[in-house]
Length: 357
Length: 227
Image: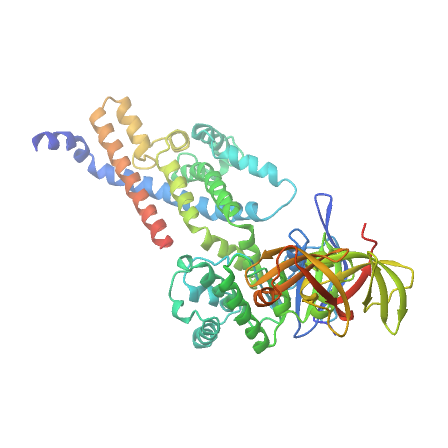
């Protein structure tokens, strides 16, 4: 049985439909990442799940029991939420982290022990007596996370909690957060538009756009097998090419893209049209064709420095984008005009419905 | 030195009266501002947090009430408490109670208005954050009071300042009766009318000092709670 289930959820505002979801479930102990662009309705979904906002339609069920509106206090106290901004209250860091426990009537040494443990877990024990208003962005967000986690909620709702932090702090805190959630066995709904956060934390990913649920699945499934163009584009699939399915055999489709024949791992009827989705990091580049796989000649159009990796735009009869390491680019002497061989393994080409229009 | 003594002579001469006037001023305005806070703060928070039919009208009334002419308040309270009025049987007219009622009516809209502005000035997500950490309705209200306390001290200062220095309403419903309903402002009016300008000025200075003292106190509390 799921911990929380939303069914036929509809939320409207000023005549506009913000959310329209047939079904979404959060399992016990699961980290569900809701991924989508700004304005997708992610935060609205989180507020509805947290019983902080009334839906215009549909229902919410907690462990199979329908949740009325307004939700009982006892149920709200099984959840806790952290927002993008830390939203710390006045007073000290200790006061902030102790706030929810005090609401629940906890006092004395039991309260102190829990607060100190949470502060230690988020590496801010030394800031306990400091006024919350004086914290840096990273410290404040750690305090906000500790304030929610200390309540040991059955469901933790996180609304882009790391979005306003610098990249190094964000990465460190993301890893710490994952450790804490795993250690405490918490269920969590984590809203973000950042792919690294989604893939680092998620047991399952739900892709939301325009208030609609586009795809739900394990990170690998969503990444390698997006079910529609919008998902592939949001996941920065990189290469979306119009393809014609020539034949199907043993789960492998033979497709033609701009006169080239490739093999894809998708089930599509022969003769149908589709979009071939190829992640840039799956494109192999070599000086000369290898022994196995579909190799073809290509010309390098441009090489763009992206820091740790380089983006290579190729012309293989159709445009293809690849990502290579700096070392590989140096060894292959990649530069505009260079002639190279390109290979795509069957597993790296995925077909999705669409005709490229 | 002699000149100072001469200037203070009229004040010193009425010092027994003065203590009573000063005490009554503080008592009437003190009780009135406490009542106004007790009524105005919950009303301001409710108006700031809740959405219900007629809310806009109430907010408009509050904003209008913030600029109520005290003399009109005095007139209305007079008519209500007069022997022939609906509350005449209570026999409150020309008592400190009537003055308190009038001052509560003047100060409450100010307290509601400032509280409302303070609540609306908080990040809306703060309310969600408080609720999401498990606050009940009353706990939510109390937390808002705590978070908006700087503004609430400002509401207290504005409310107290508006009534301690007010004369029209207290004159009308209190009657400026010596030893019973005479307060600082009505005493100043009386002494001015009688041509005792030195005494009127001395009382005026005393009123200013009193107002400054309370404002200093409110500011100190405000800044201390900010720290």
